[in-house]
Every structure is written in C-alpha cells, then in structure tokens.
Length: 492
Image (cartoon, rainbow, N blue to C red; front, side, top):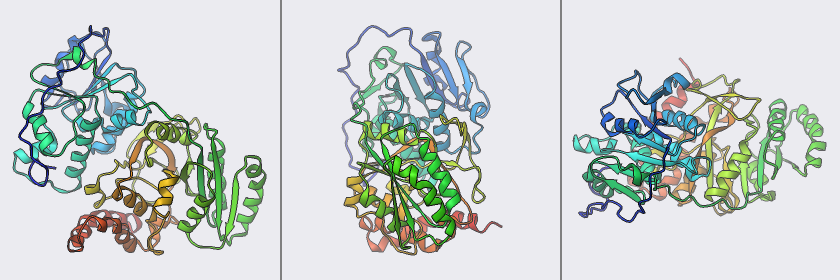
C-alpha cells in the first residue's frame, strides 16, 4: 500500500510516454469530467470547459462548488440519492450514468477511485468501446497517508487503495502534473497504464489518441444454470419463471431436488416437467446431502463451458445470462460475479443503499443490496469483497478446484470457494450491474446456520498464504464483519 518495503524499490522515474502518434485533434469531442466541484482539485479540470461546447461535469459534491459557466453540470446525488458515501457505491452510480451516455473522453479527477467500475466494465466488453477513460491525479489516498506518516485505519482505507490502484492500472491513460507521484506508484507496486503523461497542463490532443485496445470477444459461450432446491416450491417456481424470461438463448437449466420432504415440491416438479423436457433441461432428484453436494451434482452433468449457480430463493433479471455471456466472451475471466440486487421481499439485514434503473421491464428499478469490488486479498480477510454464489464460473476452473467443499456446518461454502480461486491465482471480476435479486429472509442459510463457524471456516484458503502464527491477525481483521452479520440476525 505504501512505497516502503516490502514493495520493490526503484530509483528510476517513470518517463512520460513519448512514442504516441500525434494526429489532428478529434473535434468536436464530447468530454465528461467526473469530479467533486467542492474539492481542491478544480484546477486540474476547469480548463477543459473551454475545450468545446460539449464539455460537461458529473459532480460528486454534496453541495455544488464553483463550476465554469460554460460547463453543463449533472449532480450525481440528485440522480441516485445514495444512502452512504463509500467509494464503491459512488463508483457504481457513476458507471450506471456514464454507460447510458456517449462521450469521447471521460476524465476522473482527484477522487479517481470512483472510476473503478467503469474501467472494469470496459475490460469486460460491457461499455466504453469508443471512449477514452483517463485518470488525472497528483496524489492517491495511500500516497497522502504515507506523506502524513499515518497508517491505514481499517477496511475503508484498504478498500480505497485497491480501487485507486485498479482504476489506474485499467485506465487508458494516467495524467499527472507531478512526476514524483507516478514514480511513487511504481515504488508502491502499482501497475501503470501503457500511457503516462506527466508535466504541467492537460495535453488534450495526445489524450484523445490514447484509447487502448480491448481484446475482441470470443465465441459466446453455452452456459449451464445449476439450481438446487429443498422444500421451497413457491420460491422455486418464481426462480424458474425468471429463467424462462432470459434474453440469451444458449443455456440449459439443471434443477437438483436435494431430498425435499414437502409434498408440494413433487407437485411443483411435475408441473415443470413438460417445460424442462421441451427445452432439453434436466431435473435430478437425490437424497438430502446439502446445497454444496446439490450444486456439485448439477455441475457434473452440465454441458456448458460456464456454470451459473443460482439459489432457489433468488430472481434472475431477464438479461442476467446475456450480460454474463458478453463479459465472459470479452474477458475470458474464470469467475464473474455481479452486484446483488435487493429483493423487495427481503425482511432481514440492511436496506437497499441506492436505486438503479434496470434493463428488465418486469423490474424497472432495482435496489443495490451490496457492492463487492473484486479480488483484493488484503480486503478479503475483512469482508466478502468478492461477490455472491450467484455468479458465472468457468467449468474447467470449477472442476480443477474440486467444486464446493469446506466444513459441512458452514453456510459460506460459496465465499470460501471464491476466496480459494483467488488465492490459487484464478481471475475473478465483478460485473458492475445488478443481474439478480437477492432475497434475505429468516430461512436464508447465511442468516441462521452456525454463523460463527461459517465465518471462521471461510478464511481457511488464506492459510495457504499466511503462516499459522499470523492466523490470529486474520481472525481479528474479520471480527467487524462477523459482528455486523450477527447484528442482522439478532437485531436489538
């Protein structure tokens, strides 16, 4: 996180990119600046207001600051009214708005970690194919902490460092008026984009030539949806109905009845049999062995190159499989999770933290349940930053890791699997869109089953990286999340 050890030190400064072709300016250019108008970084972007009639500001400020008269302004908080100011939520709202616009250049200034989900979406082939995503920065959060001789304090500092370093790594260009900052980034272990421009001013002509190439999409995959169920016929019917509505045609459903004893389940399965036969979907019945065994049983007969695990109490938005397929084809990632949506029938845990419009006409407005950010090994010891089980898994990777395992008492076998995959070096990405509705209720396994044991067991993959003598530090780092989770199940 800092430029001190254990990061490799390099005395060589980062040289500005000198090999870029300089072509005539691409005018008129539509430019969007994403910044806080009440902050101290206005000097870094205010000059862009004179670049053309289409320059605008997406303002992150709580209260509007000073904005050049020529620059049209949209206030993020007027659009989404986020319930808190944590950077992942603001970043998600920023992406949601930008993806529905059309810009030649988007410039993230100052609080540039808010660009994280946007640069991830470009990597996943979801948006911004013809848009340059630039970071303009003279410092980062970790840079400022180190300069002030302050250690990071808890999850928020570590999370913000991850978001900022990933935003810089995936951006098309880094622009900094302070060459010592880009040098610091190298010493702190950051991976910089191919194009780094340092020095005074904003070299707009050169920035407009900096769009990096994203790998072209491969063949769209055939996907196997693995759906275990146990004694929840009414919820199962809703889950299956949401799969029938999918806009993507190349998938199958493998439904595993894990030893249900409710006679209504047999009636439900009988009612579904014609639909499954018509679509060449599969129904498996087995003795009760637990959800992990049921998921693994579905995976064993799957025909798809990717597996999508779905719980019977969740709802798939109509475009879920299509968006997952696009991201898989463009990125080749081993695991792609997404943003869980807040199911309207949720009766436990926190409320939705923002409302976002959806591509699904049956669910035109969806609440944001929580915001996983991805594969941060330092953050994963403190909180689930990886995502939910309802995600896309490359089948070859799933088989190589032996499927879902862990203690039979644990209800976090999905989080444990995601963590193991990251520890073993597989690529996990978070698709920054709500693709399913997550129902949290009294019968949710994660809300009732051996909660303390589940939290301890899910950390076990990290023992491959951390000596046993440091295990107490992992437990200590994890305590706050356990306390919050326990509070959801036992409200005061």
